[in-house]
Amino acid sequence: MTLEEKVCPIVLAGRLKYLGVNKKSDWYWDSHALVKTSGDYGITSDGEISAYTSEELGEMLPHHLKTDYVFTTYKMEDGGWFVDYTDMTPDPEKIGRPFMFTDPDGVDHTVCQSGKSESEARAKVLIFLLEHKLMRQPE
Picture: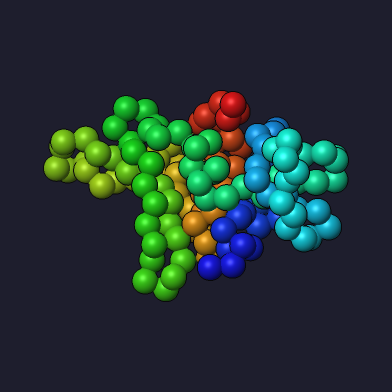
């Protein structure tokens, strides 16, 4: 697996920065190139965008939505990744269902995303949760 596959794509990293995610990463994007952060483990320039790894994104994502919906990640047969929040209630009619909600405009949504890499799918879910105010900013 290449380094580019281990971190979220620059477009999604930029969206996370725009949404106010300012956690530091071991890597950052600078003019479409990946660069390792310096020893102070910080971002030094406004032009640099944190390139979060799937592990770093996993630390930012909530482990549960509501009480019974658990964060799950799957590798698909085609090599892509799928991330969602799955109902783990003991009720056999509900178990395995994805988390769904209706936004203020009456549109139904399912919290699930896919991507070519695990970090891409996780970044998409984090963006979705932040945009729909289903979680607070990661600390």
